[in-house]
Image 1 (cartoon, rainbow, N blue to C red):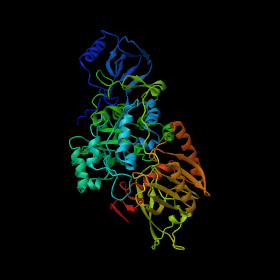
Image 2 (cartoon, one colour; image 1 turned 90 degrees about the vertical axis):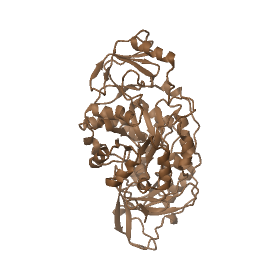
Image 3 (cartoon, helix red, strand yellow; image 1 turned 180 degrees about the vertical axis):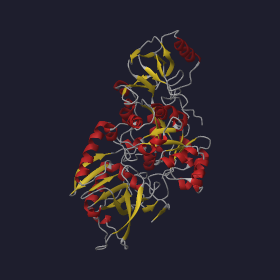
Length: 579
């Protein structure tokens, strides 16, 4: 893929003759380096050895290690261990609830110098305009934000999204400097059964990079999926599943998000032998979780504490990730590589004491010097007002399909419960932890409202609601009281989207997400404080889940087994059909 687009921060221009001469001169010490990191120790991810000496940087490129250098600028990193910048290999910036600029400011100081994102959340709301927004933002952020093109908008035919992207819609977006390839192909049944629209997209990116998404897929169906040219997988949730996918040539990305927590299950698979084919990703992680636990830094120190070798872990965090995604210019601290560097107090604690992105020190001044892009996707919540009666369940059978939550997983159980019909309705039963869940179409397409039951929130009263509802991002509400559900859903329209907690028809806490109903325009610190208030308010309703809003969001994703709900109704994902 080629592009006439001028090189940007996401893709520096190839060095000309004069720049090559400058690099060589600084590497030999014939001229002072632009920047020297002095006094640290380099962790070599090829041999596992520790290398004493300075790190010399010319512009955005490392030109020397393991020797003494003079520099026009000197940074003292005495006593620190230097490692390559971390690469998050799969995430949705929108799920951090802040713009790409605030995401940059939130995680780059923790050592994340490259993030490979799929903007399919915003694309499901406003289409190609959302992807173009992320591409434009990538030209200004300090980190290297790589923007994959969203493969499944919508994720499948059993939901109403705000947009549809076919192969011909993606083709004009190809060639941007931030691009690598096609993002996670979530419609794995469509691949396996050779859906025509799926084949069009696979053919368009044939020979390039295509990300995977195939939870619990195995055997011949997995062979078929991988045969389509799909090379990565972040949905493995057990060691057995990960090993089969590794054996079949996939790069397995260990995921630890705010809801999807697979690190402990997959840690035994990460060894010095498998590390070249394993990477790290967060997928969906919000500022509250980042503040309380961390980002990739949290994953690194946790994996080491669980027994994985530092060499295996830091390879997965950088070198293996760079190799998996064809980013040959990074992943090592070596001459000729991009100067993405993290200075740590120790390998085990992984606390960043300094970070450089392409040779630029990460600082408030560097963030302040960035350009910006106007927000998009305003006034995207177009749902009709709802009333309490809209949440009644007019089923005629007492045997009821119930979504069973697995905390820390986006997989759900397909439960069956007997719920009595009274006055033409199957009401919530908080004594059995059976509460109403509803999805309300909010894109102004059809006004659909679907209701069902969910078990696992612990909700005793009130309601919570959100427009973060994967991947279609309609309104999703869960509640023990229909009137409270109506108040919560209607309040989201006034906020232009967000999160709401309601009890007694009064709003207890809220967070506005006016950018496509997904992202705040506030600093990440403000969003973090609001999330703390929302979590506390949810607990007053009896909610026991650590991350109730993100857990709620994934209950509407019909490409993750086993039972989900969309505005079309309850979805048996295993059978891939509406109930």
